[in-house]
Length: 271
Picture 1 (cartoon, helix red, strand yellow):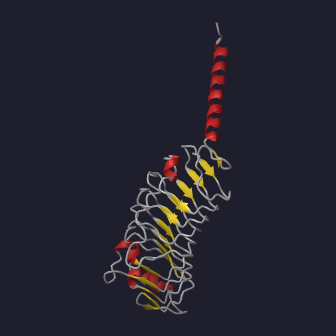
Picture 2 (picture 1 turned 120 degrees about the vertical axis):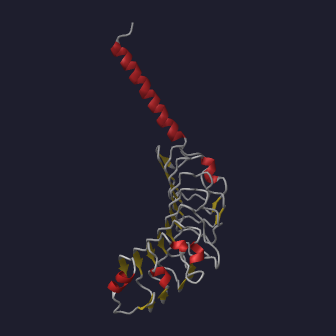
Picture 3 (picture 1 turned 60 degrees about the horizontal axis):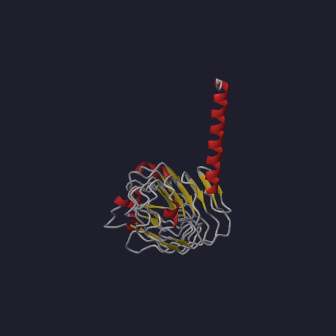
């Protein structure tokens, strides 16, 4: 007969063996040269020219494959990994210039996606529809990104934060943003934007939820009054432009910000 203490000891040994096997199993599902834990994976700066073919742990919530030489985001690459728990994906500073419209299909939990520092010129319009809970997206530092003249740049029913800094953009229209109706923060600084065009005689319903607008370091000479009239807009960053007219007010070195605060819902202006 085993004593109760022996039984407890054996149970502890069995639990320990189970945990060791679990750890080995997790490590075994990590691609060569990458580093994985149960919730994070890293394949940073490995000179990869394509995405790893081996699978990652299915429990990953954060995956970083930045600073490599990958050029294409294919249709089945991410789906093949079957990481349904993934929340954050960092693909920044690669050489991505081709994106399949269905490349993010199946990523129902993805909330943050970093595609900054790539070579993206065009984006298939439905690309960001398929991760239905995507909230944060960076396309910054894609120096040849093409802004459609009379069409949406992208579509998402959940996106709240969009980064388009350093993309060599010279013009942006409300039409470009009409398919991101939940957008709250837009960062388009360090471009060559001369005009922010409004649609349908000033209709700006596409920006009805916008709280933060950073248009600093551009070539703007005026800001449409429709932008200042947005009821949700709280923070406006204007520095390093060529502004002469702000809404219906003349803009000069003696511009008085309190007039702007009095006439709009804006709480913070950086000029």
